[in-house]
Image (cartoon, rainbow, N blue to C red; front, side, top):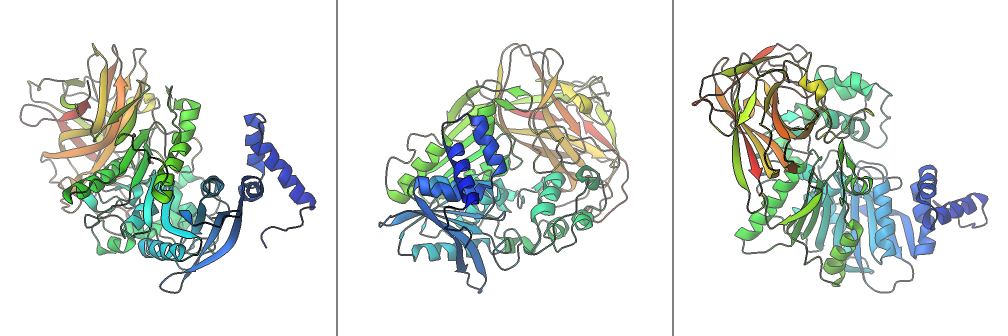
Length: 619
């Protein structure tokens, strides 16, 4: 038994006291302290006696190939009726992961059966873990098991953030009749080849491996079997500087790990089809309440998944219930950001929302036939940074947006903040270009932006000061005039560049930056592209050294207000490390190389070789 039923045990009495403290009206700091020292599972278990649910921590569910997956089942005490079920599948341990345990407590206390399941090959479950091989079929078998239980009403909702959200989309591919609704949060990592994105687990951007998050996640969570020894204690920042990239995880953790397969496998290889990521062949029909943040590295994929779902349902003559909420904050921190009032260096107000009320209303409607199911919520609800205001839209980008082109120009010396680069609404009148040397052994450091999961305590995500970056000569900087009126940006950002390089392959990074009257510069949003993929991931083509070519950098979406009297600027460079792996500029496979070459990269801007920034402006 996981818990003794000797309720006079001193240990258990201590637990009960802790629970009383955490659930009473004592000051919040006391509740936070108790929760920081008492295992979450103990609190959730004992809270069942107060909130009226019971738990079975030893459920085993057989998959079609005979592998058994471990789960915990929470049900309201004394309930004789049929129950809707909330399913949470996760790779982080059903008996210890806070989000799963808190979901069990919340939904069970509100009358739902809740099944928290360890994914295949993790913690108590058998088999081998490769995200997300068997993700669809294991989810389908779990739904079949749920609806076969005497207490089930046949309707299941799925819930959770990050991997817990991604696996919901993986399941939705099956269109199982019991999958009545889902709440995927920070779940863009479910995107595979659909819409030409080739993102796979959210670790690829423009064909570039997102190194800090990919390394950090696979180092901690990517072992193929739960019996693997833990990772060695290492200096992560130092480890990320190592080469070749493919060997980084096994240097710190020798057990078999999915990291090498992800890094080594070409993005168009048939291997990826075995991992159940969303492709253009999928038609998603599960009603979804989708939540993400402006600082999430998979934001673009989240919006693309919503578009894919909406477009497919419209083409079939259906209107799929789907709501998208984009909040301020970093990956899975929409609630905390709303409460703290801070996102990077920005101060926020009115940033919170009643998320758990929404979750309950959503599932009450789809799983129990109660209420209106958020019928009054718009298709898109998004927070405008800098304006501190929530706006609504029926589509993305919002209706009413106009695209403004801001052309890059200079006298040929846009290097660093001391250069002469400008942004203008008018075409450049003279032929010119800006040149910088990109040395992969001395890359531009990542400061803020869509950083996630690196394991480096000093890393800060979101809008932060760019002073260190802007002092470098390998960063081209183009600055707008002072804005005579407020400029509200809402939609996808793109940089259309005419470039050339001395190398056969290199990367280009584009970053939009807010320039404050006092000289501060904080990043707004960014994106990157490996030049060989300028025609599409499925059409790689190396550069011809010295020959100009065009490429488009997807800089993600944003909603941001640049106030009157402020300016904005565009950074163009070839690295942001360690957020993205370095391109060694050889034109080779990169992942297994250790020697790089310096690339002399050029951005052209004249009447024929134009380079410009596309801003979606909402009046």
